Image (cartoon, rainbow, N blue to C red):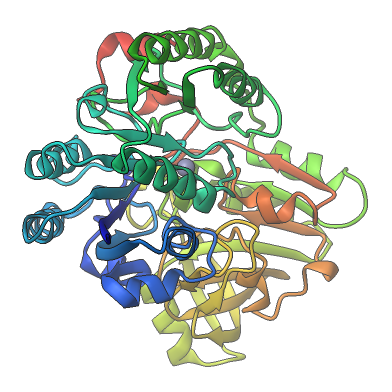
Length: 487
Ligand SMILES: [Zn+2]
């Protein structure tokens, strides 16, 4: 007998403090597809939908139907009308027939221009239609997981790596257990425990530090009837009542065991919360540290304006420090997102000298622009394919881009906002990283997936921006006060 699996996806992380609304164009740039188009785009990629091919091969008796799949690069809140359209379409497709299981690929840290818990609404809406049919979900490690999720899902799991190199693996795990549950061979029951503190992700890499210990504990807790234990660091720039870290566990027919595992993990995460607090150098200190580092490529990051944390590549703190120091070594700055500047550079043409005002365009409270002059070096169409290991195979569209020379510093300016996490970002601009000494980039930990092996040293710094280190700077309205104090 053929069984039927429905798949839908909303992978979006929203920074409530970014002015850049994630609209239809933002989703169409990355992912707004259904059916074969969604599957084809994901085929061979290290992503959730990339796992569906393996699933179909392993379980030929299952027929997979891919409904609306949507994702955009993190920015500000999602346009609520677009969310409503997504929601209505998914609900109508689910209602249109009988399913044996439903799988949702979610991020977990979405907010819209009107809703602070859009994913919970989607989960509850889907579940109200499918009744006893099992629902499985995969989440990002930075999801702000609502405790109510556990009422609706048969099985859920989160990424176990940051940088996230296990999106496909996570989906494979959920799909396997979801199908096994639908076949009646597994009776998973879950528990979700909020840890009671907000964590920042500066020191959340899973290779070292507190999150490595937390992940190790989660693996130890997966024994006996306990099938799956997930630790969610959360995304503190989404202003939602579900903010803060979360522990989640699923056990086979054993609610008590799931509850116990989630509690133990939540307590461990809470006790380690101070280990997530870091002190970072200023941009000037960071650049000096990097230049004093070992030979080869040295990198300085600006996580407060990292697009994958909702930054919009428009703060000038790091660039101002760089320009003041003017290091006499081959230097690259990535990047500013400034469509009007790209247009102006294209009008001026290669070789032209133009007046530029960099950064500080959208939110002056994060610092004034840098006014200077630039020589136009090169244009690109902004398209490349990620070489990985993170998001391997993802087609990136930066819009039109321009490479500028400012006092000997090569500066990339783009129309679309996407973090320079992949070497392809630089190859596109004709930049040879082997010949580069100093790379200053608006990135955070995901950058390390590709650049840790390439760089002699990576120095994180803190400058004003929408994803800054000091959460007390941010005007929260929905996050409970006690949660903000528990740091
Ligand atoms: Zn994440």
